[in-house]
Image 1 (cartoon, helix red, strand yellow):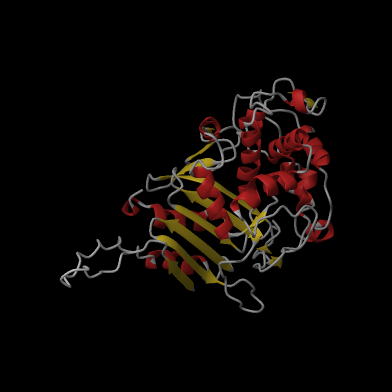
Image 2 (cartoon, rainbow, N blue to C red):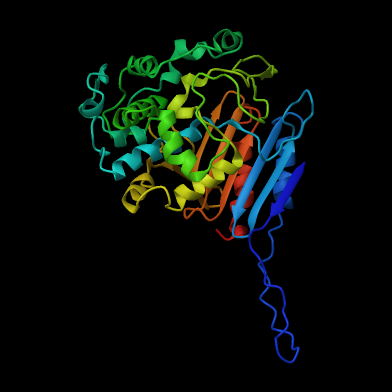
Length: 392
């Protein structure tokens, strides 16, 4: 297990007056550093035998930054987890994609009420879909009714067990994956319900590219990564490896065998995830991004209000209990009754969570190096950090 605390707050040293040698009045002491031994216990429990191979948590609040870990980055070498590691962040990517769209809206280059037909004429049609009635807002809050290509039976089958190894380097174009999503009929009219769908974010990203005249990766770099100095964050495209230091990503590959075999899924072509789940990042970069996003430093007030206006996530296929989905972000009311904001996501061998207080002053980012534990460890770490006793 590993933990580290660093504070940016400083306390004035006691000085002597320039006359008479009388001691000056000491400055008020800084607020006590939080005791995160309970958090470390939660991490150790998550990485116990049968749990995740490794877990990291980074917290930032008014006291500074704290990093904790348990387990390993590599089960073969036994290397421990550390703060600079890069990992696949899954659907946490959607917050980045939505931010790009909202920045363009703020510049007057598009409107959230623009339709698919306005920007992608002829692409969204058939099977009950009508691009004239589906807006950009419907895409970003998952109320378009467009089917998630990832849930297509034939497509999903290629990612299970031995099939995954045969297809791990396959390349997919956005048009191909959008076509898979549109092949399943719409279950409801746009705006009538919530249905989580990666297809939505592929369409939104194509609009970003059409408006900017460049690639999504270029827009991400120019508008978010470079301005915020996110040195470990990038969209890999078809590049199968992870640049720089990183944990291995261990996966059961959705196989039904009991007990499940664990495979190293670190290396793969994630063009299948792209704008919906393809970004690679670090806990520190996610802290910086979500701190800026929640704190209102990436979007003007109007677009900030749009982003954090949520819809009910129950829908025909219930989503995470206690959540409301905005535009690329969601609120999550924890069992303690405290509500946090941000995003989370999963891909083969990695679960990521980046949530915090609505003002961005108190943030937690976490990553699991295995994909079979689900959200349970995040419920534990968030509950420990943002429980009523934390004063949030």
